[in-house]
Length: 490
Image (cartoon, rainbow, N blue to C red; front, side, top):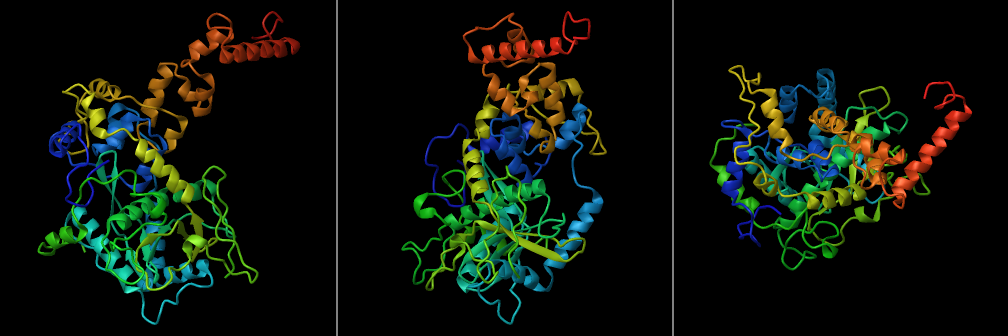
């Protein structure tokens, strides 16, 4: 699906060379415009709406959708306040203090019996700094390999992971990753919303689970290609396997075609100067989030480990990604941390399937007119767009969108897309469920016309249902004296 971290040639023909694709995406952004990076939250939203070519292209090209929406006159209204940022950063620093000892304690407490003692020394925190995202991702891969082989509790603070998405690599930065003594890896997601009496806001927990699933998917991608030191119990080829690899060849949203080996990439960066330095209680989860509750409690009240989280027997050091992430939140109304394990296997499966269905960015770009660009032509202040909004709107409308009301909470262009959908009378504005029920009737006008008997095939079940509903409504209004012909308002 994309180029990964080894030097093997691509397995099949591509519609565009890597150089040609990069140049095309740069042309779409505009001259001298740096690409806007994706994060896991945006990626989870992208995977939730795989049919939207507009978002796939804009995200793949690294275009700032927030700035684009402002230039179009439909700015997004969601986001995080500065106070929330400061509070979240302070809480994260507290949780990660003392070499991550508190995080490891919380994780061991949730795992219950059978987890390894952390030892007298704090978990070592590897230096993950390197030049550029490619170097940081390679350094992270090497740190994961070394920590897995060492067989100790190790905390990786803000590692950088690369995940191929729609033909381009996306760099993701989880809050932390913990390497267990048995060689397994756990994603840690630290949030600033409170966990009161062991329960948290269901929608926020669901969003955190979907976001963490993206990180876990990226870790599976690393585990699937990372060379590990050979040892008793390892696979014959000495390559780390993600959990379930034996039944699901390959990892990530698509098979890898080429990438630089992590060790090689890290070696290239060595000579460069670095430019950056108790009892288990169920956590309330949203019914539609597909996140399952934490581990059930045993007879003694201690949390029982999930079978997938059981320690690897013998001296095996093949890496695997645990499917239970550690969600850390403030406890009650204090700044003390509380944690729960959240099963993200369903989110993983959903994200993997949706990313595999994403249309390749080069295919979408190839269908555009050659002179299409989303360049805002910023003024000297670097913030004010000078390009006419009508011209910019024409460029945006040249890429198909798949609007749904859920976009309002996840995409910066949602208000623009909603306005266009309303102008066209599209039934998508009423929700995906309504759109699916209406079949071939794609506009509000055609739905009303079919319901009133003006158009439509009476043999069509959708048309018949609409006419039946219209008749029932008219009968109910007539009985209340408010229907047509009853002297009241219709």
